[in-house]
Length: 154
Length: 222
Image (cartoon, rainbow over all chains, first blue to last red; front, side):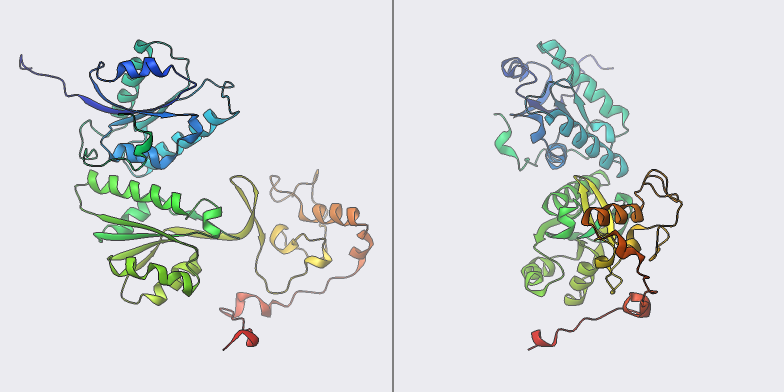
């Protein structure tokens, strides 16, 4: 490997429920984590829909991670369960089309520190790699902007 | 409502592969209610097809549009411009909608994105059950509003068969015995005795076994 080799910056979209993780902790990761990280905050993870996850992939994300409240802790009863089903369905559709079902994932663990969230992001990228679509593949295209741009934090 | 489900993605991808400009046309009535062909399903499918095209290094331009109904000319006209601007239409409607679109746009290939499954109801969110075979000779009044033709595995007009266990069908223990439902309902209504009346064999000439049926309402024809 050449001495001046730099590992490519990997793009990932993080959809997070504001009740599941501390927004300030998540914000600190932006620009400080060696990742091209796009944040989409949600008042409840039930807001996530299949099309938002897919459009994040169209927008250039190699992987998408959805952070939800732990089981039984959703303030709105079952938002995390709905999110889990939608993430699962999106993965199934991607897998069925041969586009890497593992590129979308969900995490319902209680994540409190930057390190814990960063680890979850890295695991999501590893899972995406394992699903068979290579990093930086033609599937990503930075020209696309998600239509749900209202929720994208600048 | 008419219940349908999306075709497997590999089949859809194969069908649309010859086309560079594709209109995905949703239908906002029955198939929207069963989460198969409304705006959201159109958007998801469009996104998947774009990702697939990019993965394969192909060019594809996808237009997304959902009209109220694909089986009525008034609504179909709203899609005219989008249809003429594309090479093909992937219709997310029931079989009737696909055919109506194909009939009106003779020079554009119209492809089915759904498999039409049955006429039924949404039993609970995400669970759909067949409840009508469209036989053309409705006898729901004799069976307490439960269609034994659609819901009895043996299609018995004079039941029950005696094989049900704990209210479940002996052919498929996962489904309710239709005749048990009839008896429960008619007991509730206090009309159980009317089941003693013999139900004559059905006249199947009103079904689709003699080819496609037509219904003419003379008073509505101008």
